[in-house]
Length: 79
Image 1: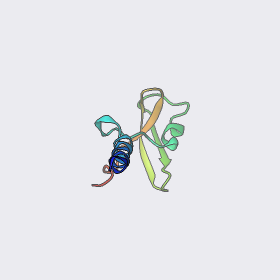
Image 2: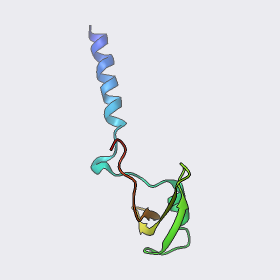
Image 3: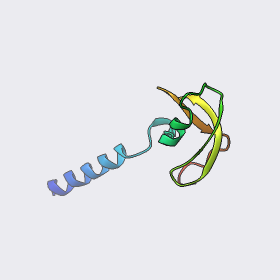
């Protein structure tokens, strides 16, 4: 019985760690960072997502460096 409880607790802990970061923040794909190489914040760029979708947007400072933020971002996963 204790073993089963331990397995369940470990499984739930893994689920908790695998959830989206606080605030439902999503990180841009590498292509969004690459699109802003050599650019300034506010510069217009376009790039192709890992799914093959064309996106246009503007460079914005993320915590460490510039990344392209889409003009029309896709809806959050699951919506």
